[in-house]
Image (cartoon, rainbow, N blue to C red):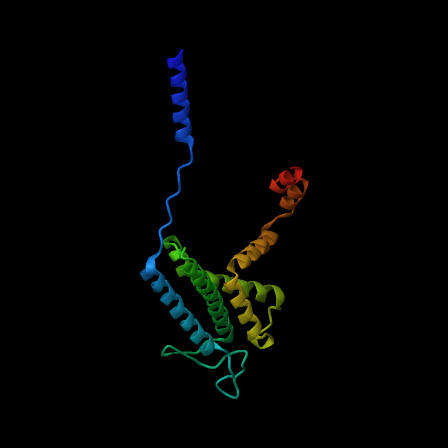
Amino acid sequence: MADETDKTKATKGAAETSTAPQDEPAPIPAGAFLTILIALYLIAFTALMVIAIVQFWPGPGPGTNERPDILFSPVNYLGFQLSLGAEVQMLLLVIFTGALGSLAHALRSLAWHVAKRDFERGWILYYILLPFTGATLAGIFYFVIRAGFFSPGATIGDTSPFGFVALGGLVGMFSDLAFNKLREVAGNLLTTAKDKDSAETKPAEKGKDDVEEDK
């Protein structure tokens, strides 16, 4: 009888051990070399974006007969002479400021984690891709704002570059909030009337907040 009890306990202990959650791998510190490399990458990227915004900022047309809402002044960026339409130049400005906003967030976050000495190697890719994420979201936000708040016949001359540049910077700096807002807009556009009716008639589920209130 005792042997059977011991076998039962051993089997139960083995089952509990097999079903127990495994420990997560310990985080790996980034190290001084990688930290300095990421910091230099962010600083260089920031300098490029500041130069790009200054060079691409709209000015008067190249000639007295040119309309400033059709063609901005030619751009000389990093040795390349570019003549872009006003719409394309404004879009690039918004994209640059979106990247600049994300870089400001990344530099602040990196300085914070380095000061706390908890900068991990697993976050390196996040810091590398963050400016590209901010630039992409800023460009999408620009299209949404132009499509939703301006008439189809509106030109750059009817808008202010300061407003769009400020929008791009905020979107890049707070990319998580911008993503959630875009998801909300997409939900309103893509949700059908049938989906709305089913959501309204579906009984509300008891969530975590309700359980805590019951306690």
